[in-house]
Image (cartoon, rainbow, N blue to C red; front, side, top):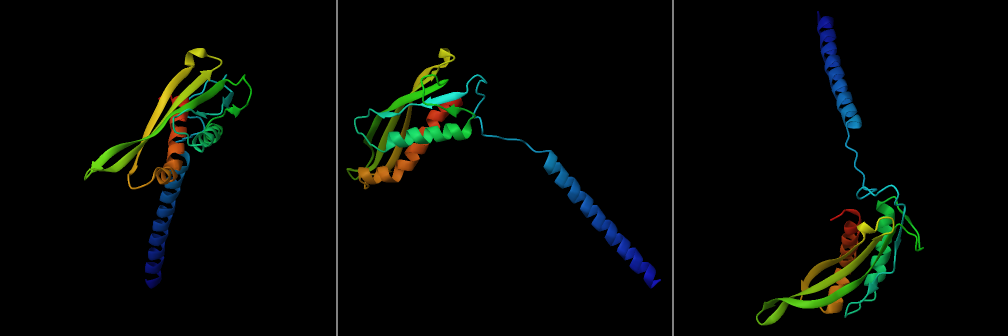
Length: 184
């Protein structure tokens, strides 16, 4: 009788382990084959005939010239297009997408006053994007991208630029990219 109970306990335990293993396999198979595929390789459908792009040197025509901004935006934009689209960069005039533009505004204004002193300043950054689709001129566009960056008025302008520099470049690149590839 003792042996019978022990066999019965083992068989119940074995059945429980088998059920657990089957449940785990079903869950594993469900997550393996029922997945949602998401890719950021192409930001939005780029027509198949579009294969190349060129980013011209983005100029700085603002009254105040920060010499570091436009070279960095130019290079980061190229890197983003290469990394997130299937397009190939070329430097000739026959690129399918021809991207250019210039910084139109890079200025500071006071936005907050406390006890008759400036408490918050705002760095205004505007960029005019000139986009040409050489295969379909109806898609050509000139659009201004503007962003504002608030900073503590206790900071010097140089300190604020150093603090905000990477954010400014990233945001400008993202805005330009989205105007071109996301139809925003």
